[in-house]
Amino acid sequence: MPRRTAPHPPETIRVVMVDARDVLGVGVREVLEEEPGIEVVALVRSPDEALRIIQGAPPDVILVNVPLAEGPATDAARRLHQETPGTAVVVLGSEDRDASLIGAIEVGATGHVAADARPQELVATIRAAAGGGDPIKSELALRPDLVDRIVDDVRDAIVADRRPTNPLSPRELHILRCVAEGQRNREIAVGLGLSEQTVKNHLTSILHKLGVPNRTEAVLYAVRQGWLSFAEIGARERV
Image 1: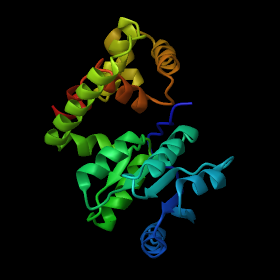
Image 2: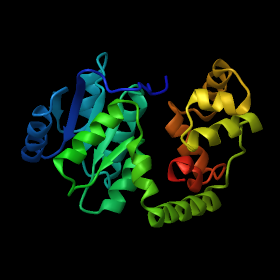
Image 3: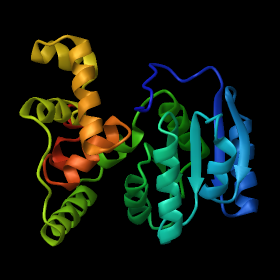
Image 4: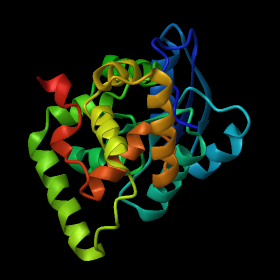
């Protein structure tokens, strides 16, 4: 099931916080609970613990503040994204902003907030992610140097791993490129002369073929394999 793309945030945004450091976690929780329309329903210390408590009642946003440089933490955070596809994941960054942003992308987060960000930035990112937005794209658009670094890493991985055969049809790849550029289903349908339902059917097929839960993961997967370029992500928004 792809992550829902509501045009506006829900009336009350339910947040589960994952913070390995109790004291700092309580401080962030206090900031969020002062905001109207945001409810912190749980504060846990690990992604694994979060997975146990949200089964059957997923929140709107999972706020992750754990060291993603550690392999087990990264794997667990990635499972959070995979097993709760209707929930947005927002990562609180570390002092190494570049590393934490890359880590957020790797676990499938839709939002990233730098360690030195103001509380208003955190709140705005949570609201945007809960409303179906993808604020991490905007952050990447401002960091062409980091995009270049990621592209180099992707190319190295392709050379080392050998790129798998692209299972997508030309039409499906074209639609996925439109998604990467930030187009919605209706815009894609109008641009290609298709019905909106046909576009939805193609997207369902794309997710099934790539084995990913949502549009963002499909785009990132295609970039990793070299079928799309990072320059195409959010290209329309940067024009």
